[in-house]
Each structure stands twice: as structure tokens, then as C-alpha cells.
Image (cartoon, rainbow, N blue to C red):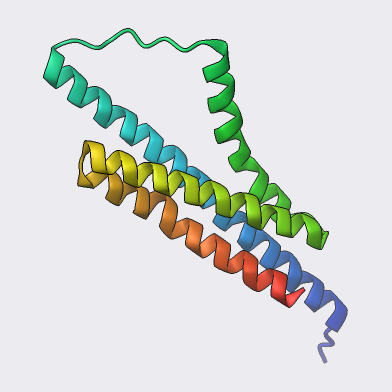
Length: 144
């Protein structure tokens, strides 16, 4: 006869939910990286088509650090989702929500300037997985 350890089963379910939320945040981060990559290619393609050559792109140290910090911050929500403390789960939810909202709004505004496909790409790559991640994080916080 099989016997089930209820405590162990509950522990496995909690770990599964933590992993699910972390993977949803990681999917949103990958979507943000895909969006910015495709947006950069679209911008360069339009610029080269209009001017016949690519401009010299230069970044100073401050710009590079800002980009590194902004996109590096996408690693925090998945890591915070794996943490065991409720306060860290709240921090992951708030940070992830802010990153998803800022990236989506930036993509929509860029889409207004550069064309509808860029805005659509922002919604599909960032807003859609971001909404799923926020919802899963919220359900997990309510269950804990």
C-alpha cells in the first residue's frame, strides 16, 4: 500500500509554484531582450534605408552602466520569486511589474514613432508574459 506524506506533498507543490512564477518572470525578461533586439534592428534598417549608411554609434560609460543596470534588473524578479520570504516576493512583484510596465510603455511609444509592428511586438513580447507573471505572483502571495 502506498502512503503519502502530506507535508512532503505540500512542500513539493510550494516549490512547483515558486519555480512556475520564476519561469514566468524569466520569460518576460527574455521577451524584453527579444523586443529591444528586434527594435534595434528595425531602427538601424530604417536609418540605413533612409541615409544609405549607418551612423557611428557611441556610448559613454554612463549610458552603458544605465543600460546594464536597467536590463540587469530583469534578473531580480525571477530570483526574488525563488526566495522563501514573503517580503521578497512582494519586492519581486513590485519590481517586475514596474519593469514590465516601463518596457511596455516605452515600446508602445517607440511603436507610435517607428510603426505599429514595434508596438505590437512590445505587447506580445513584454506585456503578455508580464501580465501572466504578475498574475501568478499575486496568486502565490495570496496563497502564502
